[in-house]
Amino acid sequence: MGSTGISILLVVIGLVVGFGLSFLINYFRGSLANKKADHLVEQAKKEIEKLKRDAAIEQKEEAHKAKMELDKEIKEKKDELKESENRLLQRESNIDKREEMFQKRELALDERESKLSEKQDEIQVEKSKVEEIKKEQLEMLEKISGFNKDKAREKVMSMVKENMTKEISEYIRERENEAKLEADKQARELIVASMQKYAADIASDQTITVVDLPNDEMKGRIIGREGRNIRTIEAITGVDLIIDDTPEAVVLSSFDPLRREIARVTLETLIKDGRIHPTRIEELYDKVCKETKQQMIQRGQDITFELGLTKFAPELIEIIGKLHFRTSYGQNALQHSKEVAELSGILAGELGENVTLAKRAGLLHDIGKAIDHEVEGSHVDIGVDIAKKYHENEVVINAIASHHGDTPATSVISTIVAIADALSASRPGARNDSLENYIQRLSQLEQIGNEIKGVDKTFAVQAGRELRVIVKPEEVDDLESHRIAREVKEKIEANLKYPGTIKITVIRETRAQEEAK
Image (cartoon, rainbow, N blue to C red; front, side, top):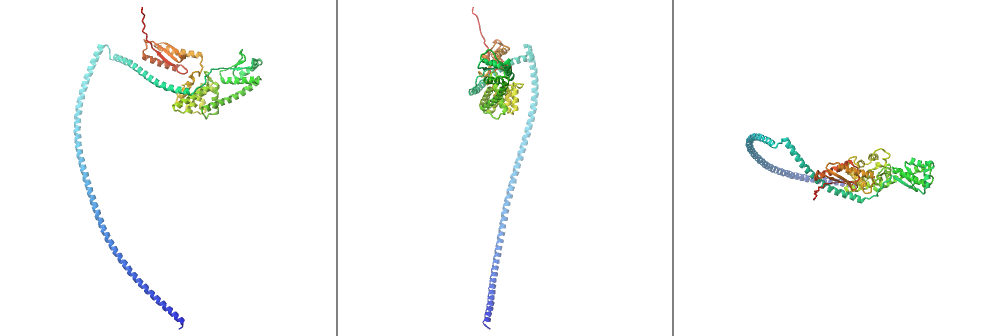
């Protein structure tokens, strides 16, 4: 065989030997693994047996413990049931005792009721006897006194009424004095504080306007040929021109200040221009009307700006400015409205009310006077219509409607505006009243006092600010004097219109007089 064959044989022998060795090795490994597995299985079986024994022991212990707890719980339940049973027995015993007590009380009440019934019968008998005795005594008293029951009642009632009247009068007088002291103090403080914070110019009554002329020759030119110039001026302005002997002056007369102002400016412009004829008069009149309208708007804007008020319709601003050309008892309506607005704001601030709303109501309270020459109706009704037209606040509308007492005030601001209006109108120098009205008012004051029973004389003094009532002392006592003062006050408030306040003083004087001879 060659070397190749030997090599192949060696390789084959090596393979057989390797395979045999590998088989033997795997065989011994498997045998060892089986032995180890059997050993592990044996140990596992032992562990399982041990666990079974331990579990059995634990189960026995748990069962024993559960049995002990159950026995304990059963014992506790039995004790509770026994205790509940004892309580029920005790309660039943108490109920039995209470029922026995109620039965005894019921018997006692029945006995007492029977006694009360007997007593009631006895009282009824005694009452009937007393009524008979009272009746007999009353008949005897009527015979002795000569008064029957009705007359006696009337007598007693009259005495009680007289005494009560005196007591009531005394009580009313005391309460009135207390109220007056407090109210006068607070009102005086408010009014004085308000008037100190505001001051305005003195008013002057004026229904005419004097226009100065450069010379007397200008009068002829104003009159014109056959009076055509003066007729044109009077026709288009609605103002009377009075040309008399007054040197270098003509007088414009009209109850409407706006017409009078337009006529004044028109006439003064004509004099400066020098061309005086009907056509020129009409041209200047139209121009002055437009300028005056702009002035009214400007005045309205100035007033609202000074008062710090906003959100007015342009037409309402013009109406406010128009108040400048309206007067009441010589008091300029725009200045009066501004004054009322200022005073209303001050009073509202003192009382903690809305100052802006109070100023607005005060400014617009007399807005109807701006057009009362053009629209029919009182300035109050016209003012309410204007305020509603321009969607003013309900408080403002009520303040306009109620500031003269025609409508009840529904807010504190309405009352404040009425007070401010009275303050502005009644302060010294605010208004000029005619002598005729003044004398008539004084006469009516004295007449009101003289009409009251028990009054001897009445005098209006202090320029109508005080009414002194002298009573007959033999007919009127001190308490009756207070009643007379109150009655006079109520009649004055109901029947007279007057600025400010009127003090009523009732004087009762007793004089003892003898004559030595």
